[in-house]
Amino acid sequence: MNQKTAKRKFPNALVIVFGIMVIAAVLTWIIPAGQYATVEGTSTLDPESFTYIESTPVGLWDLLQAVYGGMNKSASVICFTLMAGGCFNVLIASKSVDGFICYLIRKLGNKADTAIPVLALLMSLLGATGVMANPVVAVIPIGLLLAKHLHMDQIVAVAVMFLAAYGGYATSPICAMTVQIAQKIAGLPMLSGFGFRCVMWLVFFVPTLLYIMHYASKIRKDPSASIMENSFKDEEVSLDLPFTWRHAMALIGLAAGLGIYTYCSLNLGWSMAEMATVIMLIAVFAAFITQMSVDEFTEGLLAGVRQMAFSAVLMGLASGVSVILTNGNILHTIIYGMAAGIHALPNGFAAPVMYLFNLGFNFFVNSGSGQATVVMPIMAPLADVTGITRQAAVTAFQLGDGLSNIIFPTSGTLMACLAIAGVDFRRWIKWVFPLFLLWAVMGLGVMVVIVSLGI
Image (cartoon, rainbow, N blue to C red; front, side, top):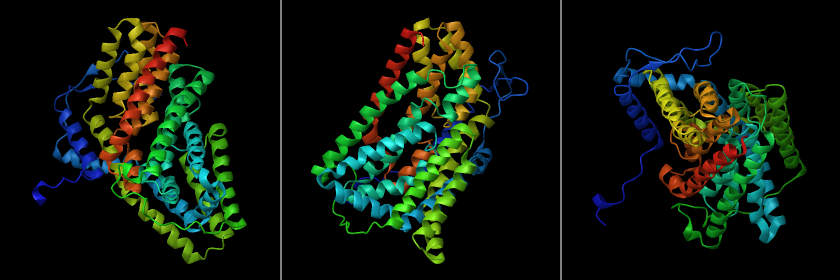
């Protein structure tokens, strides 16, 4: 075949995200600038205060400055990603994870595939707590190790870790970054609707797990069914790696550290800074108990940091989209247009349309807490005048914000996970889009049920 007619390579993720930044900058020249005032002493928007203001379109210089602005805005997340990647790689370098996976597969024998649902359930529960939102980037290498030992592919690795975690995050009954912030803004009791959201989590988790297991089973039986050109089907991986009591203690340290952080994040308000500290302690303990030398510890740490470098840059660039929309003062105009459109709808349509709007709006503001702060001050009073409950408005935000994280390239976490696993965005979308469509339809069903039951 002539090289000119050869299949064109899909653009690098950095090119895709920067292209979206350019589109956002162009929109600031088209959409009128507008602004809501905030309630005094808070960051909450006053829904009655919208006014059009003088346009502040983003030019070429401002567009380029937004690259740094996005990096600066995401500085804490970038720093955490590098630290977590380095520290988790120390655990991997200790051979504790490899050893455990080999041990598990040897013990399970022909039932080795059952390791996938166990890990997916764990990641979904951690995602529901909010613990494995951004930090999921750091554990993608563990998913890759599992997929490699099972002779599967990189899609399985990302699905078991990222997809399961974000399915839990999107339907969480307790996540502080989404549910609790939204309920606080809406004036609802904290964790109200807990039982309903637990059922919602289960309803979404089951088909998600079946979707992952169906693909995993298919490529296990027929490796050529993989949508990846370079899967692990022909890679020889020895299962003879030892798993000693020292390795077991390192993993117990990991479980204890994550358990302590989960408890403290829910009860003591711990955040990313404390998570980073816990991960450092986990790494130091793993190195000590497995008798790693100082050089081995340092090499493992730096290798993990290097592995995360591209992902960290990608996260910062993705945040640049939000910087452009904010500097161009069109973010609030988009919200105002949405509110006006929903207000004109019959009452029964308000909740589903709120959900669909948030599903799309997440493309522009890909942060759970950030989106809650922007949309909930508008949606809460809007729920009052359209005859639906504020709990329904919170759920519309929660599902809209969470479900689309698995397809939007403005999600720095998604793009970072794909980069680490070596999965290009086009192949990921090809695989995950049918599940996303199912999620989207199920989300509509949830909103209809909520309105019908008056929850």
